[in-house]
Length: 301
Image (cartoon, rainbow, N blue to C red; front, top):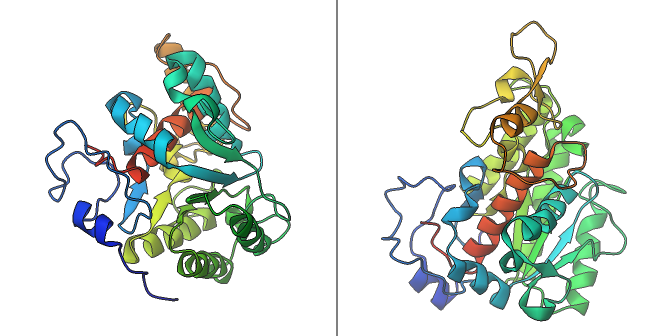
């Protein structure tokens, strides 16, 4: 693997410390104040967006506006990955136009180009490498884009260590060749295989690479491993639909998202959520806005 590319002078001055996930007790975090929202793209410090990053109310309006002012995002995905964008669409109806997005950023919205690539559909379709060539073609034609994010479908479940190494190598090469673009890594969605399954091992491989090399990770699997109260379900065989085995008898008999929705009326919103429940897409949208705000310079505190 290639080494990290150099920090810009501005980014080094603004972000001297690395921030791991969104934990509020991070001792390296600066005094939050009103939230620093100076754009820092490209983002060359560790950023892991996971289940601790799903508090939409914690993101200052100034950070949302900074993201809309400074980011130009290209997002490639198929059905599972659509949870981010359908959740973001539903969020506009739930909380208002502050969270609007569209292709090009018309009307002051976030410029998020949904599935703009040609030649690939997600990180494993039609194969494990086509997305990288599609990314290069798109960036060469759209120099204004400064954030690229791709999601998996179900490929991580059966992926080998070498397959994930290829993904990491392709991402690393893109980061080297396009130093003004933030490339966001992603884990694969839950499949019910738990902590001992291949999916978890391969997701851990992606996480370890990002931690060791100060990369930006949207931890799709971790976000859907917890309910909004912080209760964890991965070890209970949770899958992408949020089903889990509540009594360890080998059968998934409960659904944490449906249970939480029923217990918290008015605290979530209905939206399309491919292969899953609306609450899962809610959380994916909240975490996505945390990601956008952080990339635009918000300190996360």
